[in-house]
Image 1 (cartoon, rainbow, N blue to C red):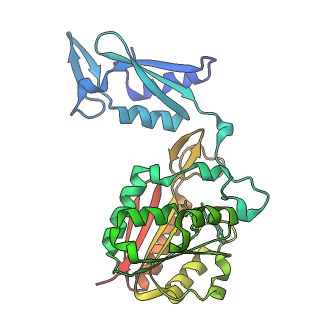
Image 2: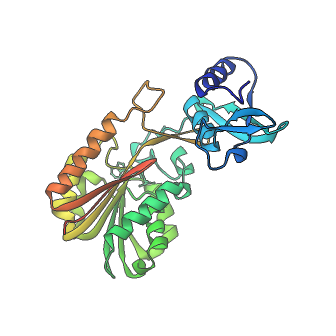
Image 3: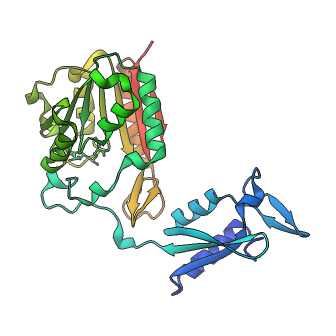
Length: 305
Ligand SMILES: C[S@@+](CC[C@H](N)C(=O)[O-])C[C@H]1O[C@@H](n2cnc3c(N)ncnc32)[C@H](O)[C@@H]1O
């Protein structure tokens, strides 16, 4: 039945099964390989019968939206395969629980389990943003909220010309910075400091200010920090890459789309409002601004030509 059902019939069926006690929810559907080149919902004929084609992307998205994990499909009879899903544990949502606010994202926090370098969209979008900036040899780069230095490692890997760049990272997590120090040695300057008191550090100016997942942190005035970045820490031709989470993490899975409290599905109002502010502010300060990204929205500002 499900091999010919509409998607909303499939969703209703899965929701009904989610209310039951079976740990695994199974569906027999057309093997997506049989419909290669067709769009979701187009029909595929097999032995005189029509089947609805849906690529794996549809099933992965469905699982994500319903709070399920998609398991490896099994072979079934004829042109069908058996899809299998299990419920995610809602209690396994990643969240900061450290009593000390500076260690919420520390080396032993839940957050330390996440590697953005395993997110294809993030890696590809950062690479494109860096291409737009085309940093000069010997560039000075500042990373606000550097944590263990994943983004610096990514920049070094993506842009070999940055071998002689100066990297400076700021964070208030002592344990995350200890990991970064072990990783980079003296090649990266790291300051354990509050981003609200940057002026005491005498940092100088930078060709690129990079900050991922940090401006919207509690205790940071994002508008004021952006103003200080532009006015006090950028060279006249300096560029900015800012990243904002548009996802959450639960039970080993990433769920796309930021959520307001008590919203089960994505609600992007606040994210869009913030990004619109950053974009407009940077444009007003003579930058051409690009907004790209997926699980992380990237605001890239380069000098206007
Ligand atoms: C969500 S994490 C992002 C870390 C890293 N940029 C990444 O994307 O993997 C935010 C980082 O900002 C740091 N942070 C938050 N508020 C801060 C503050 N007021 N001063 C210094 N660091 C802060 C946290 O310790 C944490 O490392």
